[in-house]
Structures are given as C-alpha cells and as structure tokens.
Length: 85
Picture 1: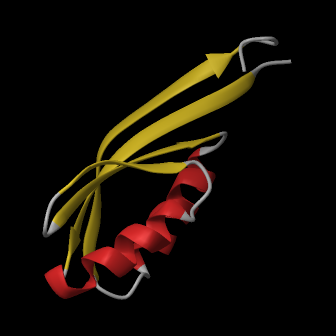
Picture 2 (picture 1 turned 180 degrees about the vertical axis):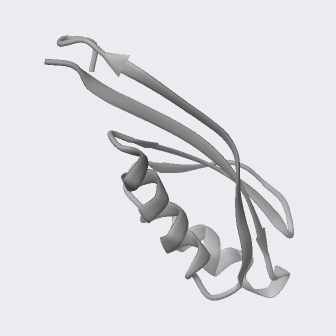
C-alpha cells in the first residue's frame, strides 16, 4: 500500500517582541522545524501524510499570538511505496 508524503515551507512574519514565544510554540508542533529565523521572519518546514495535516499546522501557526502571517512558499507531494517511509 502506498502512502503520501507532503512537505511545505512557510515564511512566518512575527511581531519582534513575540519572536521568542512564537519560536517556542512552533517547535512544539509535530513534524515542524525552524529552518531560518531572524528578528521578524521565520522559515518553517512541515512534513505530513496529507495536505489536510499541513493545512492544520499552518492554521495552528497563524493562530499563535504575535504571528502576523504564515505564507506557504513551497509544497511538494510524493507517493511512497511500502518500505520507503
């Protein structure tokens, strides 16, 4: 049976005074990792088995206090055969 793997990256703009809190909360999201960050922007990479799982993570990030926007800049989907997971 094949499974899908979805990978997306986001640019997240953050209020500078909330950056530490936002970083900390993003790191608690399963399958999300911080790739690049500075004082007002983060690049977040998320993996998931479905497009819906990615959208749930994006919605969760947008709901974090201090996040101004989370914009998807890349999305890739692959079908994995058994044993490739």
